[in-house]
Length: 331
Image (cartoon, rainbow, N blue to C red; front, side):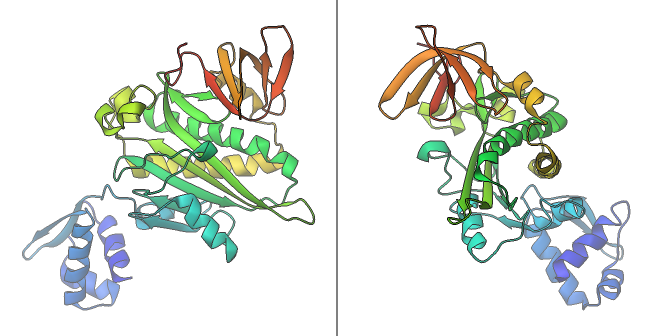
């Protein structure tokens, strides 16, 4: 607790030095406790200048993800009002599901600097190196029929596009159903997992897991992913603050969640405008069945309308859809 109080005081006086005595008095702790808190903050990556007879001054915030850097921004939000940050974790989704068993708060957010067992759709691994990406999961408890959930993942993709655009000034596309794409490479993946009450068919909880590639260089990706995956850094040359992007993402998710409960189709036009799958040849894989066709539209329920070579059309709601020209699919 002392560390948080010292950080708060230093933040309030970034233009001047604050003496150890003044910090001690305002925090209600000893000078030794102040010194210990300053050293802990330095170890976490904060830049704190100290000058004899003048005191301490905050010169740089940490690049690590810390609740104290973010929590104040979510005070009025439903999503993010309970925020937990981990240096390393197996999976942010797994952690939230563990907490859901004991009744995690609607809107709980978990952030991690590194995942050792990050997962994507269809059981694929999601490479999550330390300090390179943004790995976030949010717990939602909408208490709605299962039939309404399919729209939530699509809405999440739109909200994240808005967040990336706000911070980076670039406009990602969406590969159906929920991958964010930049320069034909995957920038972000979303994995939505849910629990349903067996008797009523009502959704009990949803965990929306998000992984964004932020600082990776091409050589940071495994060889098999270098033509498929990209990052904000590799595709734009920008060096952005992960904390700022995390804050923008959580605020966008909070607004999305509020809007979604009012009208589950309100983001449909935005989704269609950003969807890079429509108008391209696609390959649809469902188990052993592999077919190629042409993506014609996204319908009112966010499903993909595909025209097959024989002229028939099908509304695709699941499966693995590859898009020619994206993620290395060229044949």
